[in-house]
Length: 263
Image (cartoon, rainbow, N blue to C red):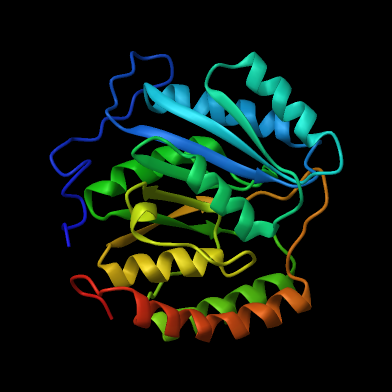
């Protein structure tokens, strides 16, 4: 297998630019976020992404993944795409779930590096600047939430899930499902994604680890949701994810060739 980072930033120094400075950062980014009934958030989230990317790099695209929304999310996404050259809107005619929405975003991305987050505005896009320099130390940057702004029950569920995933796949990450990650696009040319729900983050990271990709971490701030309704954490979703976890382990070991350092 071609060693991770044989292509990309192996021999490129990462340069961050102060806001307003000439932008010569070599990284080329696809940025996407899934939106399901996020009419209250999609405009400000997209404009925040634009501001952050313009300060960070010279070449980027922003993809809004409208996942079968039944409110004005799709209409607003199309308006944003018409207004800004860097923005594209793609639409799932029916709600495919979180995993299905992320799969669409990964498939639509065209740049060498892919960053994704959620469309609910609970992260600060400017903190992408924390992730890019870490590519000097690894192939994937997976953020973890500082002062996570969720209920006690949701945080407890997340802690238990992360512990289980770490034990099963040997990942040893602080926050498996944090929606603030930076990947090389070539990873998605090597793997086929199957998860349509809450397992998607685990599937991507577990397959990357098995192929020998190095994953590094960085903390980012997490903010309360100010508009819209939070989805996920439904008990049926959680139970399905536990069942799928062990199916995923068998699938990885039966279909992928382990890379250097794979566990």
